[in-house]
Image (tube, rainbow, N blue to C red; front, top):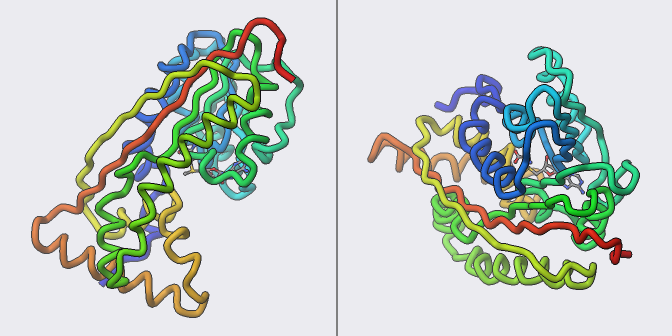
Length: 267
Ligand SMILES: C[S@@+](CC[C@H](N)C(=O)[O-])C[C@H]1O[C@@H](n2cnc3c(N)ncnc32)[C@H](O)[C@@H]1O
């Protein structure tokens, strides 16, 4: 019988998995002590708080997210840890509430793939970045949550996810054409993969819920059937867990990083 997912603290559950991806992106963006950094789509702050060590007490980080609920959780955490150089606000990535050339570095972890108008969001991130500053974002890689999608595909008894790989490939290409449209001509692409062992179905459930795949899977299922469908999927996890005593989860990311040109040639 599943325990209530409320038993799991979302931050603690997801931090160990995703904080390393934020630090990785920050290093690719050459984050340094004293910098003023923007984290676009910060959620509960899993990608934000780990950067405090990199910018030091003299630096400042601002996290924005479209979800007021997630921002209030990030704020509560900052208050409880008595962190004074991290600020959070509710804001849409497509209309950033900051003047141009505000930040030394702009980062966005696993968020741009969820934004409706990606070119508008990229244009906004470039606008608020100082010339010469680095902008980097990650999107889920080809095998992101591979094990979960395999289970979900078996549960639905059809490979309704076969289009996934092609879609992701197309996505990366489309970001690059967005950048060209915005006058950016040079960037670098990186990738990172990590495999984790998850101890319980409840923990896996929290990860899938907070990171988005659960909602993505249930989106096309009528609302009154969602709980039943989700329970069916979790039951498949229970079977696998019984067999090898661990649940496997692969996290992969593709990161794209570029430097805003010094000359103010951008619109
Ligand atoms: C998968 S979470 C990533 C959270 C965090 N960056 C991390 O790595 O832990 C994606 C986040 O993007 C946010 N988001 C989606 N669309 C957005 C938009 N248009 N503007 C700002 N945030 C958005 C969601 O609310 C969610 O918190």
